[in-house]
Length: 306
Length: 306
Image (cartoon, rainbow over all chains, first blue to last red; front, side, top):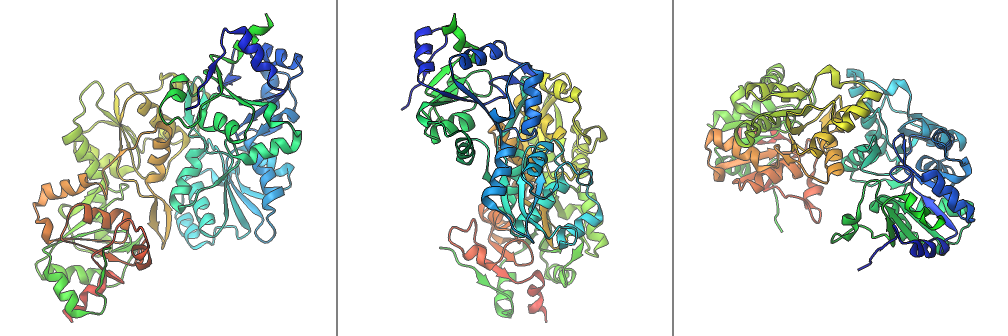
């Protein structure tokens, strides 16, 4: 049974921990902030790590924002970064579609269930899509929909892929379209499959709430492009060529962040207890993943600097 | 390995089959009709069975209609019946809440995700509820929602139960409320958990598309009141006191109808191939349930009458 080392308050352990790594991959929600609330000491901790020559990369499963939109969020919260340091699941999905799936006409359109972040990343990769934030998909079913979705006359014959992400405007019409495209052979992708979405110190439905009904209807699991999918790790590595043995994944969720780091064979994983999972979760029998290290909060790493 | 007897075209086998039973429980969608399309010969087949002294009972997982609404559908399609012969999952859920759960103040309200059928059945049983078709739940999230749902200020402290059924107006706001009530200890019920909903000779998202995201978010399975839940069988038996050994369940789905009949230890199950499952499904390795008998379509049972 793997066990975790507690670092909070132990300056020599923290020093040793930091010395082991050159690169830190950070989850965002639940680690740096919760919704629009920045956790205390986060900016200083990132600055401290960078001052030690560490590379910081932000890896988020939130597909509602594109990298430029994420950058705006970092900036508004006072965290210095650049789009180059940001990896989101919408970006990961767009890369996967354009560079790995390589859909070809006449079936090269993506039917998107999700928000603007996905659309922006698809546009950057020149991937044609329908759905997404299109207002014509944000409405109730009509008698014509029941008929035209069932017989296919209202479906776009060029759709070859369904990409499901977190959608604050999820509805029956969108799910119905998604199901029919999948039944007609579209490739099933999900930006991520998180059960919940952290916001306002609480939780709301996550991207899994969109893809799970479709998976249940079709009996088909989506290829998920967010954590813990190694497709995302490969994309990050493709860009930075880091040494996995000297890279640490920092996150709050065992089933996404910590699992992502372990399955990616990184040198280490660090759990923070400001989000979804707490010590009791990884100490429980049958825990989905056990972090190598843990702290109460990210800013506990600053101790060594004092 | 159980095997199924094929009755279509075999008049002596049909005669023997009919003689074995006094009561026939019929699933509706996929057996009697598909959406608004009545299958040929259904009315005559039901009349034929009744003329032989058989009791006919209609058992549906569709919670969008109450029994009176279902009666109107039967009538409009030209099928003579009465509300006494109809059992829907909305009715089954209302009965379960009022007679088994017996919620007491101050936590006696039901938060409904679903259509008018559920509301009508709850009203009949004098169960107080919120949500359902209330227009104030049919809208996008606002900044106030994120805050007030997270901190609980927008939640009704009297809710003690979440009842999830098929909702053609499912949205993020409804799922967010449902999740928060469950997190606060509400009992989790589902009218049914069907993955799909048959309509216009095709399939659309079923009630499972509503409860599954909530189950995934909470790690908690709902008590399902529709087929194959035996809560529904018990409710039917409580009303008719039929002899299970001389009762046959007729349906198109293995995972709901046929399983329902087998787990209810009925004398027989009959699969029709006008809906979701076909012969290949129950002959497949690891089939979820195997019917005792099968026909191509319900009206094949009329052969014996000729």
